[in-house]
Length: 394
Image 1 (cartoon, one colour):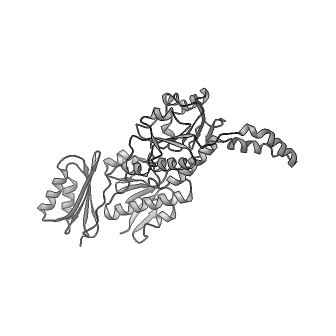
Image 2 (cartoon, helix red, strand yellow):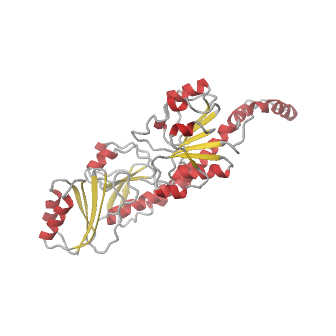
Image 3 (tube, helix red, strand yellow):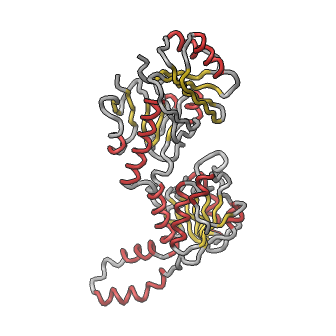
């Protein structure tokens, strides 16, 4: 029987093609889908049917998904970190250039000259006015990168090729991310230390309780005069009122962001883009391919790659019959599950267990068929969230 995947946004065909049509049905309406695939659709908990096994977002941020509720229900939420990193990096490069030169202002000025028909007069006017749009070069300037994950590390490398000095700050920097960074990227011990020493500051943080409104009046009060702040991460990490005050007070020279807001629109010292950081054909393809591959591997094998709420876990198949068990991360639950298998004389061929915060996840390959009543017994155990039988057990 084909698995049903509910698609709530237009997903790249290159990604959807990774789900074979003889095994998967894709549609924008299903009453009992096995999985949900989306991009920016705002998903409510009430919209998630009891049949849903997984949710996958073709993008990095998951603030449009009720992740905590999914975790309680044993539903892993997948995303595609890094798949759109190059697209965002290139737009940050654009933002740096727009924030350093009078490009936007110059273009807008040229549009006002549409009534000038004499070329000599036009050239004379441009020559006289171009000094209004003089900027500065990026070479030798210092860029602060806040958040050194997939995108932030690429932005840091890009800035180095521009001849800039780069200072980075990321208290949660992983070993893998650290290996990606050039030795030329200097580390700031605190966020305020970074803000005091940079000409440009680029933000690359997720929206968490700890990052919401992180860029506040206190931080913006210590920046160098003439600083340009760039936000191509998330609107919520910046206190908009604090940004406006910093611009009015002259602490910030320019704010460049991918998140328009009414109070920011129309200001000469603000450059806003219509949330196009990941809006390239290549990024949409990459995100869709990555997330559909992850979704398929979970549905067919129970493996977990790039989940925001479940532990990473991959177990090579050594049997046609596999159990996935999700449980509360408390003692003795897994032992009780294994005891039930032992009581039924079912041999465990291979097994892997991982935990993340309040949830534990287990893959158990077994040697023979398992009866429905045994599965029901497992599902009824205290601490067990769900049990799924994967694959052919014949």
